[in-house]
Image (cartoon, rainbow, N blue to C red; front, top):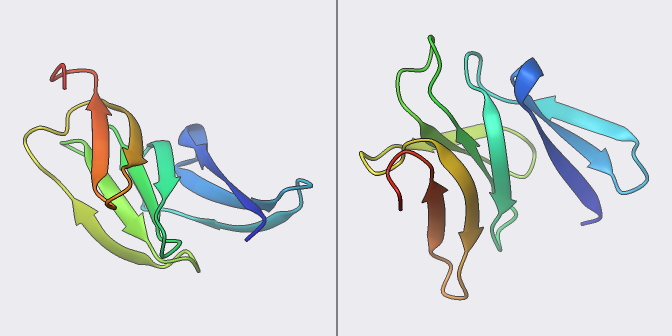
Length: 101
């Protein structure tokens, strides 16, 4: 739909807004610091989170379109994620800072 998602790192949440800026919702995982996000064809929101004192390793958190948490993606190659995108086949690609991948 016509919505914007904002990775609000300092407040540890994702904000959902209309394209005119009206606040709709907020969601996230306590202790996580969302950095980047992308949305798949099923409108699920994929949020990269960098490691913090509370979060010991970087991860990608997946949320349903309504903002409900679904699952985490963790892997040794996810370290300092800088961006994410889906290719035409629906595969998620993560650009990392710390792993040069």
